[in-house]
Image (cartoon, rainbow, N blue to C red; front, side, top):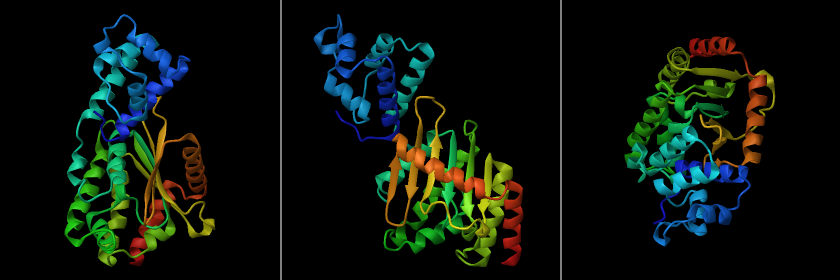
Length: 289
């Protein structure tokens, strides 16, 4: 039975496909080798393997073991694949919010739960992983065209729960670039903004978070999209980019768009203030409020 495509199932499929490509086998040949000396009821079809590699079908532990054997990938890598298979089948805590957020946002949370690193670029508002609740509620409440007032609290809950990832042991770090206009835009009033700016300083002391401010003096912004580039611990995963705008959210896993957004992030970081200079500017803006 087909399952809803998730980031974890897509990651598993991508890893299987890359391992198969490395072995220079097409899907039909891999299936042929997997089915050798197997009774018909335990065979896998090429069409099913194709759906597995696309992230829209489950794969059994037995079939995954046969893939590992045929491709001779080794015990450690085989165990990592099986662990990802189990995680792809597990319901995530974020699914309890599926009635109020689009599937793309659910996938964003799922990406963040598994990612080891994150590089973000924001030129309008503070990155969601760094927002205070009051700041988040103001932004969510202002999006009246897309969010029912009754759902503001739940969406803020979701955003706050996402932030717990910053404190988990296997999270390696967030590097955030914020345009200066982000910290100078008065969101929710002076008290809310002071609290938000104070939080930007405190979060770097509590978690593996580094914040760089891209000053007005840097000139034209290197990009207009707000985005996060997520990196994963497994070498076969590659990177995933989540792009956010007022009207749409997009996820890119293909090499070219990932490379393009990485270039934009690197350009922004190169023009941004150092972490210490950024902290000083944040404090200055706080004092001006």
